Amino acid sequence: MMIEPQRPKWVKDKQLHKDFEVIQCGQYDDYQDHKNDDGCYILMRVDFEFYEIQVAILNYQHEILKVFKGKRPQDIYHAIFEYEKKHTLSWFTEKQHIAYLGKELKKAEIALALGNIGYYQE
Image 1 (tube, rainbow, N blue to C red):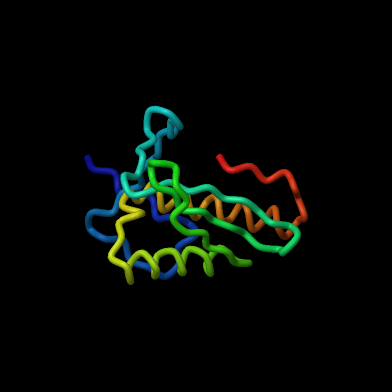
Image 2: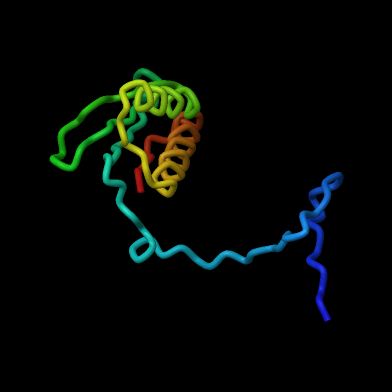
């Protein structure tokens, strides 16, 4: 006997695909599940003097390649990805790394909005 998956209550007007399923996610282990991106790593800070977020792109020789600055996360990640694309670079190849950039940018944006000088990059 096959049990039909439960429709998410928050989705009102969509059909379920024939292969629809609900997947319960396991807990992410910050050490075992982490993958470094071969292209670069980032350092991020909130500059309260100029009311902006700054993201430094570094290579694995620990040299700063570029710094992107802006007031909103979407301004910064858009500029980073457009620059990467325009110059045929491969800074962000791991989706996990892209998600991390977005998460840290959002944290920095919240810290900037709240005037919280205690922002720390994970």
